[in-house]
Length: 123
Length: 107
Image (cartoon, rainbow over all chains, first blue to last red; front, side, top):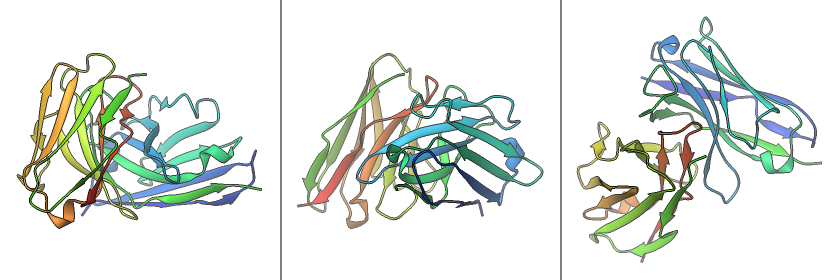
């Protein structure tokens, strides 16, 4: 059974940093692209970042570019999101998501989602 | 970025109703359009991919269609478990982008 378990969320002050982790099991982690998607309170889903199966490239939404860094450790079956210079508008539930394919490419789709971890940016 | 516009933003319907949700892309995305269902406190769930392909395990009352830059998700006979928010998502351009969502509520 595919499982994606996020951790690392919590309360952080504006300007602070936080690192999210996503522990994957039930599939060959190193064969799939992975992504982060978030949902702010009362808002819709927003794409945050993604990386292909080998971690060789990264993709970011404009809203987080330069502040967030996605990475993965295929030996540990874990996806990360390093978040810095956090703002109130980064407050959201962050979901770890598996792509159907190994590359972040045309025709990709998100076939498994974690339950999410809440990040609250507030003083 | 490619902008996805869903309509309506919300709708009220009864069990057994036929429900249609539309998603329009700001430019051509071929058929690289996916649909997700999201219930409060739960992980989003993939319903359809490549505009018209039903994800394994999803009931056949869900279907998708495409015409140019317009895409449609149809629920042929709304069931109690279908009350949720539905999102379209394009995977033609990078980054992938979502529509703003359509909330399906009980009438």
